[in-house]
Length: 178
Length: 129
Image 1 (cartoon, rainbow over the protein chains, first blue to last red):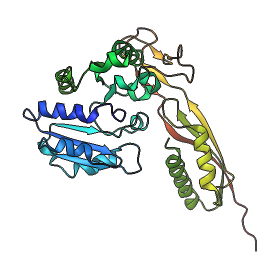
Image 2: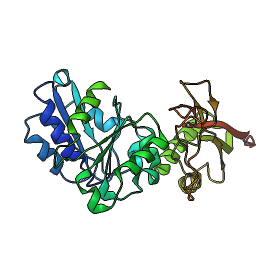
Image 3: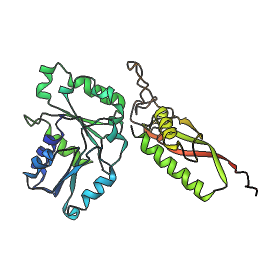
């Protein structure tokens, strides 16, 4: 889960690249209109399902259930479900996932966490992405991390840059450990 | 955000009751909605009134009680109201999952519900020929 442009698809693509030779990986991409994200992941030759919500602002368990019928789930050990870029509604609709990850990027400004607390209360992992741009943005990764921990002290916060690759291994390890 | 579909399901449930009990007229419905759910009371009432217009439920009153959030700490013995993050957030009080006693992470035990608590109805007057 995360805002539009926070880097959800790029992060998933990086994680798929790292994990696909170790275990069965599949990806569901929720998007209101385009198949851009699914097309980007499909280049990696893993099962991808594009879930178009059209007017819907979030995925729900029913849509995920339909997606499951399109892949051979027996071969999948790790399924990524990318929700719609929306920070309110997805929090309210559990998808049956084992872990919830929120991706926040420093380019969204310093107040993302306190403006959308519900999203974080239900998450186990928070990724703070685009840290290579933190200086240019004048946004403190430490302050964002501290906001997350004020809401829920045991959330694992991992700063990443999908551009430089920093932190991506740690996200992969955290997902496997859930 | 999703009040219309909640109101529609509620009306569906009440219509079911109406079909099974054609001799009863519904006057009041009381809901309990948890503090941790994202349901807006005003919007829900507006949707309910809109959907029930020109139906047997028109004029019935939707009452909504807020169920307080309660948390339990697996690290210490704390059970009770959550800690709020309201020192800097002027807009609305925000529930946190930080234990008010020991500062570790708590789990919620109450506050996510959205349920029908009671329905008030009367017996219709028998039709006399």
